[in-house]
Amino acid sequence: MRALIFAAGLGERMRPLTLHTPKPLLAVGGKRLIEWHLEKLAAIGVSEVIVNTSWLAPQFADTLGDGARWGLRLRYSYEGTTPLETGGGLLNALPMLLDGADPNAPFLVANGDIWTDYDFAALPREFDGDAYLVLVDNPSQHPRGDFQLDDGGLLHNDGPSRLTYSGIGLYRASLFDAWRDLLGDAPGAQLQPPRFSTVPLLRAAAARGRLHGEHHRGRWTDVGTPERLQQLDAALAAAANG
Image (cartoon, helix red, strand yellow):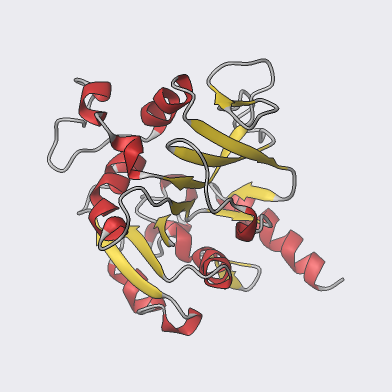
């Protein structure tokens, strides 16, 4: 299996820490955020990881190298000076993710600016539909959630107790079938390369009954601000010290 780590964001809410360091390369609990992911990916047998980059892009290769220290092959999908957002970034990286692979094979996707104790080995090796998302309890900064999870594992756009998408999931290239028709004249969709979010694609998949997932009830942090980074670092330090 291959994986993509989203690491191209500008990290504007994290400034001034991200003025000179991309957010996924910030350290927490003694490791860079992205290194927590790389260790987990290597542990479940992922062989190749694509990291999409934009802001301060050279630092990723300079810091992480070719991935050999984790037993991985790292490749970098550079998006230019302006990030392509999640949908555009994934579309841009698809040739790398599908190179020589079964076009229907799922690949793992993870946001580079989250921390979690979720075990990537719990992800299913096979699933029906276009994507499988790990959901978490709604954080204070996102109280309305994203998707409703039913007892059969299907995700729905509406419901009384929606959960938040964690930024971890399995995707298939079929998620992008007819993406231009779906987005129409949405801002950024007509640019070259296109710049758009995966959200409309995921919502369309949910409406077609092709979006599945699970609820992770463990620890998860969207490390979006210096305060949340500091809080997480302190919590991990406390846990490490018993």
